[in-house]
Length: 75
Image 1 (cartoon, one colour):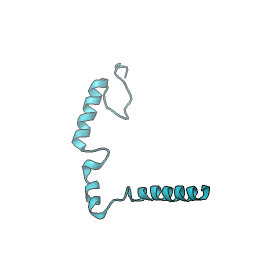
Image 2 (tube, rainbow, N blue to C red; image 1 turned 120 degrees about the horizontal axis):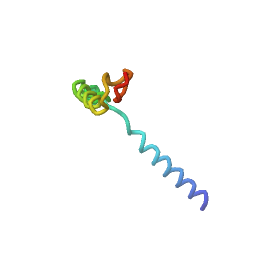
Image 3 (cartoon, rainbow, N blue to C red; image 1 turned 60 degrees about the vertical axis):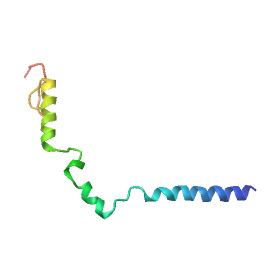
Image 4 (cartoon, rainbow, N blue to C red; image 1 turned 135 degrees about the horizontal axis):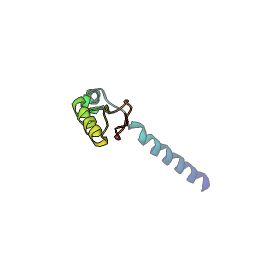
């Protein structure tokens, strides 16, 4: 009884794990869709400039990223 239960559990586990093997595979015709600029983390360059402008305006600082200074006007 214990041996049969172990075989059933083993076969079930193998079937369950092999079902996940087909996930994450990108077919050749889907690679073109993934290469589009809209699929990057940065997205549209114009939109990123707009977001940076809003960020700079809200923080009341000049230069955005990589430039010293803050909103207090100390520099």
